[in-house]
Length: 121
Image 1 (tube, rainbow, N blue to C red):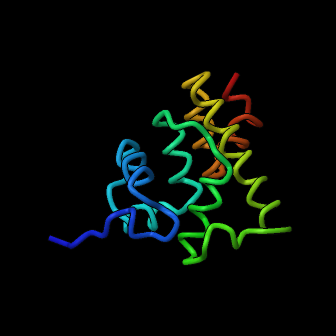
Image 2 (image 1 turned 120 degrees about the vertical axis):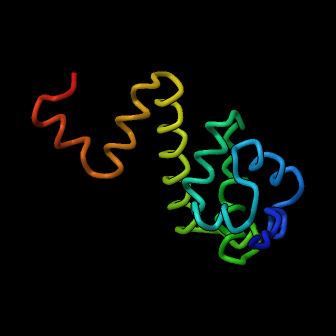
């Protein structure tokens, strides 16, 4: 069996983050790294966690091995755009589960083409 590293071994993440990610089905640092910060944070919100911008950018910084307070200026502004997009996707999927399928199709590049062909409402 492959050894796993706890989520809390990632810089900036502690026991509370580890528990939250476990509720979202992410049980190791390896699984979190494999998903990447955006997909992992989206899963966290879909599991019922409240969105917090600082928690999001602390995760991004931690996965880069950087302290959370290293995020500043243009980099922080760019992360805010990504964070807001994650929140919007989650809001849509929670309001209308059919949007979850459309969001996935759009992400893989088939949603728009399906809409252009009139295959969706």
